[in-house]
Amino acid sequence: MNTKFAESDESIWYPPGGILIWLIVFVEVITFCMGIGSLIFDKAQNPSGFQAMQSQLNRSFAFWNTIFLLTSGFLLALSVYAKEKQKEPIFIFGILGSIIFGLGFLILKFLEFENKWSLGFTLDLSVFFSYYWLLTGFHYLHVVVGLLILLIVFFTRKNIKFVNIEAGAIFWHMCDLIWLILYPALYLIQ
Image 1: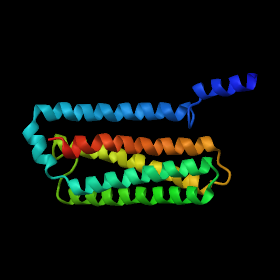
Image 2: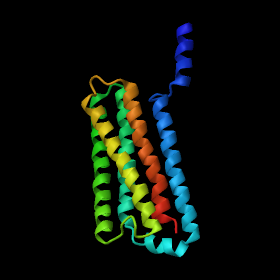
Image 3: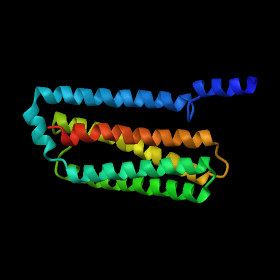
Image 4: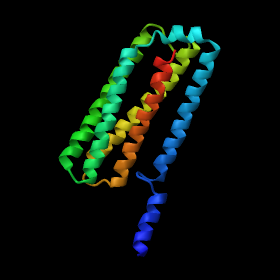
């Protein structure tokens, strides 16, 4: 009976992936929300200037990047479920698919970055582009780190603890969540 109590007590204090990853997610989401809140505040001060700069963004690229990240997140969730159920082929399919769609996001975002930079839409061009470069660049870095984590999970899949797979997936889903906040704030909301 003490064992059951210890297990249920442990699940309260040790959520999926462990408490540390949830603290990281909380801090990261708050940080991005503060940046986006600042963007929205500054946009309210100069709506026409922000709209003029925002019209220079590639909404099609942003839409496809959203599809890439959501597909990647779905495949990773499938992968984690498969690992828990000890269905190795589905785990491998899911995590490789997740990595491929994550790489697709990075490639498409890099092409967007390259295009904006070559056209002179640099960090110091306007307040809007300062936000654009800082927020999307910081997110890009998170996606790179997330992909490195997924690659580590994939290559150590025989010996890795399930809690570490969950932690990697939670970090990846944080990248999804942040993009789902950035996408409308930067590309859609006029």
